Image 1 (cartoon, one colour):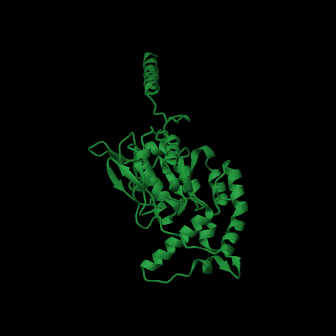
Image 2 (cartoon, one colour; image 1 turned 180 degrees about the vertical axis):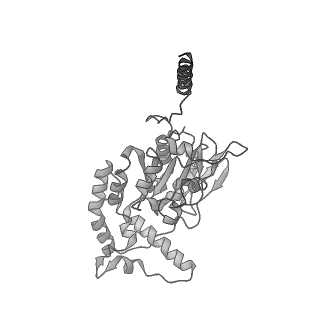
Image 3 (tube, helix red, strand yellow; image 1 turned 90 degrees about the horizontal axis):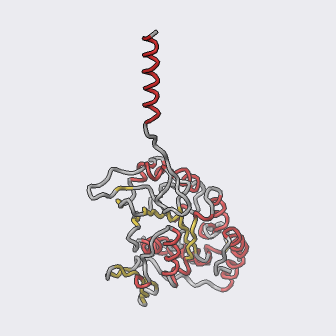
Length: 311
């Protein structure tokens, strides 16, 4: 009998020891916590620390688009903040199948080394118009904060055309005039990819299937060009960053025709490919574009509860 009691006592003691051990608990951020206090994916996927204390983290915020909306300008301006660490190149992890198959550990290896207090930022403008991307980002981190920069859809179409035109020019290849691509038999060619990419409403609906609107900050790309400081202030607030970027960080370069950056006495401008003059289009084509985008723009305004100077 004594033997049986001794065995039972040993079992009970073992159970007490097991349940008394501390448990690992995943904590989820409240709405007023910093963006980098994200759930488990952000905290689990990281590389080994560098001797200087930096590590590679999954992005805490992603600039998801839009193509030719000003994503590079936004990233460069946001990088003025000391608490921002940004990936230099577009990763295309979520929209390119070959990249996505490599997994999150590969993705985190593409990120910059940053300190624990910094936010890691990645930008790939093709994400916004890619069907599978919202769900994939959601599966990585359902509370991530997203940045979307948009501009007048017509200006975005012309900027899209301008980039492709100069890409052909650099390769000594010809490219049709803008009217030949945008018009067919005196009607708007709605099959032209640049036009489809400017239908913001349909793409935004897809994103809002996975993320609440308060997780997506829309930057007005047209305002960012004309007066960048107020737009960057809004981004700082959205990301819960301390206000470190000042009006003195921006100066208008009359030669280039757009704002450049000043950081610790060092001045720098965007690449010469930015700020190129768009082709002039005739009034007939302009009216066709305005007519086509009028209703989609109104639907987008209703969807996001905000208006822009596009009508």
